[in-house]
Image (cartoon, rainbow, N blue to C red):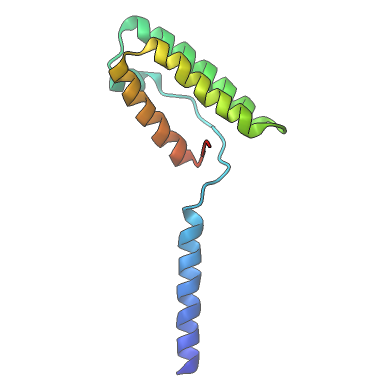
Length: 117
């Protein structure tokens, strides 16, 4: 009976630690480009805005790749890349579009395990 109890406790601890490890933020890398076509549909962008947003997204991808490959000041470069992107988007988008974009980028970064402080 004692062995069964210890085995059960060990199994529960193993399961709990495995579940908890999956929810921890990681140092994930930005590995993808932004789907501008899908983003333009979601934000209902005008033709001029699509061109600007495309340029901003390309710039953002380059900056995120530089931040991820940096050996020094990685967190600062990541912070600058994200907030630089938000600053450029704020100039390009309307208030409603920008609000939607902020929610989208926040969810995307959280899903990638990228946490800004």
